[in-house]
Length: 107
Image (cartoon, rainbow, N blue to C red; front, top):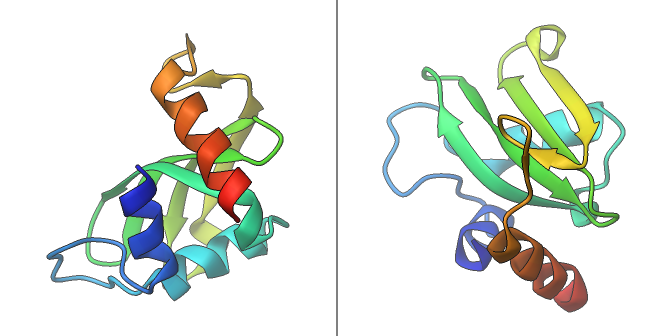
């Protein structure tokens, strides 16, 4: 998860994706909803088309958000949360908590 977030900070979301793959689109959406890019750690990001992604991120304060981002039109993007849960109302797994603690401690 740390490597994944380092790659995103470096400018690329996915290893090999034919659609929009520049992380500037991801951060543009995050900032559109009032989050600072330094205060989020992505748990997962899944392409949902050439210019849309879905996923989950955790904030520095430990809250979990699910998102559906449109890279071409922010009016179609949405975030659900905050929730102290991850995904389908399960507790945030310990490995995610540990990775988040490490990530935010290093940034």
